[in-house]
Amino acid sequence: MNMYRIFRAIEEIDPEVYERINTRREAMKEFAQVGKKLSLAALPLALGAMLNKAYAQSNTSASVVDILNYALTLEYLEATFYSMGATQGSALIPNANDLTAIQKISADETAHVNFLKAVIPQLGGTPVNKPNFDFTANGTFADVFSNYQTFLAVAQAFEDTGVRAYKGQAANIMSNSTVLQAALNIHSVEARHASKIRLMRRLNGFSNSVKPWITGNDTGGIGSSVQPVYAGEDNTVQAGVQITGIGGLSISASAASEAFDEPLDMQSVLAIASLFIKS
Image (cartoon, rainbow, N blue to C red; front, side):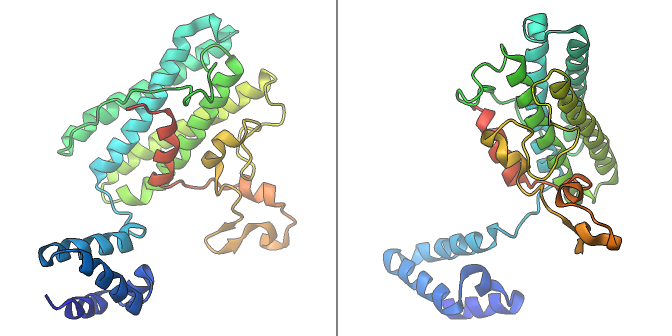
């Protein structure tokens, strides 16, 4: 097997391949070291592993079915959470108006689950099974279904994640305009949920400073346990334009971040969701 010929062929296809791995010399050195420890038959697998590592960060392509199953996992999370909260009734949710709102959000999330479970088979896929959830996040939110403040804080984190998650996958489902439209319809509802939950937190006096929108990467008083949900939300540059000085106006960084919501990639969203998934 002429490994140098293989690397030259890869170079012709992707001149930046060595920037992904390191340098050409380092790549060959790394492979040579691996080769000393492996049989000749295993060398192609070792090369494949090294190239997978090189391209893993940049390969963001996923099938529409994969993305819908990803969305279904998140909708399972939210639907189960709100259903369990609504079931507690006045023991958790102290006033009738709030209970009605939570029941409405629960119904919306259940509708999203049912829609995704129906459309995935139409695209030739199989819906993922609902995971088992731990909404205490291994004890971080131990009183989530007995303390209304904690319940709303977790709800805010879920909704803000959901908004960013749908936005993060919009470009990857553009090949199917019907699915894209449906996803955008869900996205806008998730945004309304997020705003409503934030307002409920404020009206109940749990966080007087929280707004219906995200300011910078502020968690709205929840704390560092949910900071990954807000990573990158302090961005003030859109499409290469610095918003803080646009049009000669004096726009603060906080106002600039509030005017634009940022997407969140699949890896980051799943890392957040994994805190609440047992299996």
